Image: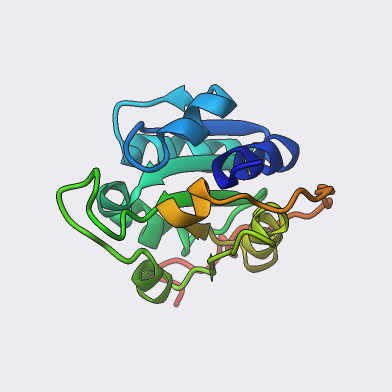
Amino acid sequence: MKGDAAIASALKTCADTFYGIPGYPVTEIARLLSAELTINERVALEYAIGDSLSGRRSAVIIKNVGLNACADTLVNVTTQGLRSGIVIVAGDDISARGSQNTQDSRYYGELAQVPVLEPGPETCMEAVEAAFEASEEFSRVAILRITPPLLEMEAAAANVTRQKGSGKLADPNLTMHGR
């Protein structure tokens, strides 16, 4: 199975809801998941945050440039925490074949202080569940960075088992006044 089908299959097992914005190289993943298309990437992430707060795991499928559009929300959600995992599947177009520029989404891990996983073809299915587990363990969004070579390669099939996990919200007593 190709990498895009492997990731979509693992996402079906590990997530409850899917939001996406079509764009190279993630269009096929969003199509395979019948992801709900939203007006932009920020709205997709905000829907996912709402799902998380109500106890549903959510995946946001976007291209590299789309990560810029939801950066403010990504950085700010780290202060509130999450109940259920959120994974952003960020498709980095490393050769600018279908995007106006190249971008490396791994830098958002440092900027937003969120975990970033970059699987290979032998681990791409397991990496999806690992990303959700990291999101719930740290109560932050996790980024799964994928590239066209990974999506086009043959990926190792694996049985992915969804683990039961949960995050926690920030202490409501920690306000600007109370800090």
